[in-house]
Image 1 (cartoon, rainbow, N blue to C red):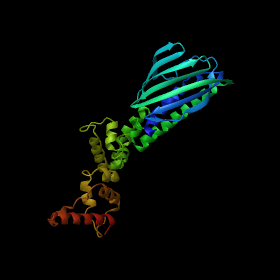
Image 2: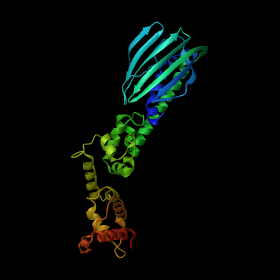
Image 3: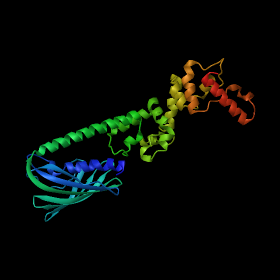
Image 4: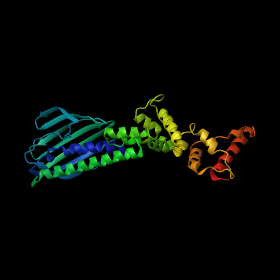
Length: 326
């Protein structure tokens, strides 16, 4: 099963199984439960496990116990129960199911779910083993697992902000981060450190599948930035560059501010030689500017040969001499 499908569907499956009457309360009886899932054209092997069901548990459809989920159109015909369900979230979930009970000793049924663009079909069956057990134990185990899952999600969302990976917040990872993390990401994008980190991902991220992009275009889309004008990504970059020039944040200036840093590059980087090396203060700036932009010619460039090819060769030699000091 593809990773993205697994990331979206398995939490729903986990929630559905967790809400079976078998996991509700104490005391209980031991049941053997088998589940088999198909999703995205692939089948997972059947999974059989023993669970502890409350002794007098009512027959209920196995749907997630959550304020975000709603069960409706519940019908009972003889020993068969059917229902429909819908859950909020990103992506939203819809589904339906039927369960047929053979007295109080066994049941067999099926659930069908649609999670975003992914379809899942799950078959369920169970039989009573009759042995006494502690129904609350399973419930506590599930609560611990859910707490661990929530902790993992929170850590992953924080890492998405620290790493400035836009795909963490688009739902492609299968996680649903609290809105505050997306807000933190978008706020960080408007800082030198955040913008520079995303810009550094550059073309490599832009070539990734859409769900794994983390470049500036993906960042702007995630944060709902307009394409031009106030609040656009270019407006953010331009403002950061003006501040970087004024505060002499030279590495950011060299990496991200071609036009804003051009005059400084002409003065401090271009045309330097052994007798006039780059000042130590500007070495990192000149290196960064040379890597991310073409070093401009000096004011004396008009005296260079008119042949464009010769001029380009000489300009490259000058830039190289300036960076290595001879």
